[in-house]
Image (tube, rainbow, N blue to C red; front, side, top):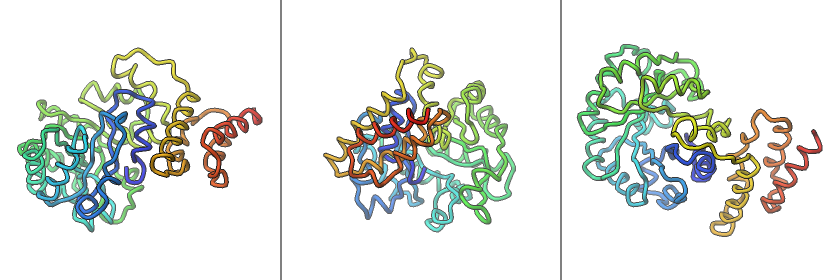
Amino acid sequence: MMDWTDRHCRYFHRLLSRHALLYTEMVTTGALLHGDVPRHLRFNAEEHPVALQLGGSEPADLAHCARLGEQWGYDEINLNCGCPSERVQRGAFGACLMAEPQLVADCVKAMVDTVAVPVTVKHRIGIDKTESYEFVRDFVGTVSEAGCKVFIVHARNAWLQGLSPKENREVPPLRYALVHRLKAEFPHLTIAINGGITTSAQVAEQLQALDGVMIGREAYHNPWWLAQWDAEFYSEPAEAVTREQVEQQMCDYMAREAAAHGTPWSSIARHMLGLRHGLPGARKWRQVWSDHRLKGLAPHDVMALAHGVVKAAA
């Protein structure tokens, strides 16, 4: 998710689940061809397994950037064909690429021919008011012939005109049945679903028909949910980790990042503001961690203040 799942966010999420595949925010080919490559691709070894999501529409550029991603150690290269924002459309990539399946296939083939790691595609079930199953079926069929074996499907259309990105996550109706039809028609492909899934029960239900589930904003706003996943979906023994232990580990990480890169703790702490979601005192705890007047303090001191406020309010 743009401006959300940076390396600090992914480090935090990895503390909660050892096995969930993490994705970067979308990185455009232009940013890697003409910008600061280390700034965009640097990540922590603890993040594995982690996928690099690319945005672009030129096969040669995507192949070059996929090679960079592989060289930097990413476990998967993912092409974004689902983002509906106008800024992305102006760059002629994202969801608007679904109108050009052969171009997407050319992009995928260029990357598959260049890297050894898996090349995957994230997309919608349609664009604008095109609601036929045949549209997404033909898209998946064409792109799979180029060597893509994994498709992550957001079960909504992307309306390219008239809706904001936020509205595009809420207004077009969810149609899970179309994603299930894709799996039935392409049983040899790995089909994962995305969109509107917020509980473990919903995940388990989808996994009866599909190969995987991608969680976006719910994982960000309610991150403690991730702490259940290894036991529930990866057959791992449940770890007796506490929110306070995770917060302590994040403070240690903030201190290391400040020493190594001069990173202010506030740019890291923003990703963990949902850690106490639903608990008494959560709002006051968030207020302390969001208070930029405290930016001169060490993160461990901020944590002590935050918990002091929670105790005082109890």
